[in-house]
Length: 231
Image 1 (tube, rainbow, N blue to C red):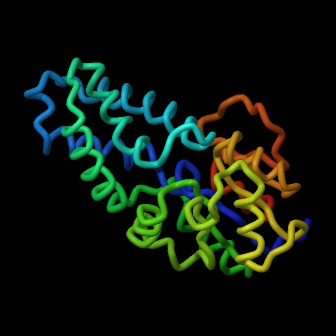
Image 2 (image 1 turned 180 degrees about the horizontal axis):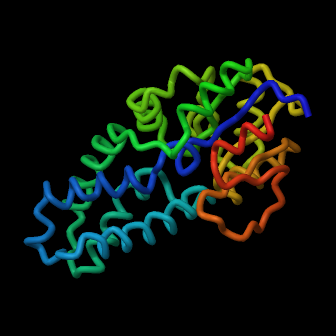
């Protein structure tokens, strides 16, 4: 296939969300004195947070909860696991989390190299993300990858979420691209790969953690460098 437009997912695909989020939670653990509140094992606390965050993001992408509820409740439920039922603390930590997180700049190995390689080959690169718009733009700028992307399509701007086809239609229109010359590159089978399937777009599943695929992508890779074999 002759692709011209590459649509990347951001979190978990090129921006290392897990590492950056864990660094941010560690900062909050220190700032809010959580050890003094009985949360001594930070790794266990982060594991609990990850479980709640994943479940609430799933509910958010399916339209069951609003953005604001997701933001503070993932922290509230994590604290509740330690018998800390403090909504005010949860909301204060949520504000700080979203202030600190975009300043973290951990990317997956070979991210800058592959983006530079693809740019040199003349591809038009864009981002399609379900993340919060203001947060995502800060992540991109602080990580110094904004130079590689022509359009950044967010769920807020498009009024839709992956995997719904409307966000992909909005992305194609905004980037002046056609389906035949476009491909979606992402780590999330339910959002990125199924979303591409829903609109009839080719896709590359970035399987960083070597899960058994449940949705059939056009291509599957386990390292970003492997994009050189496809594009």
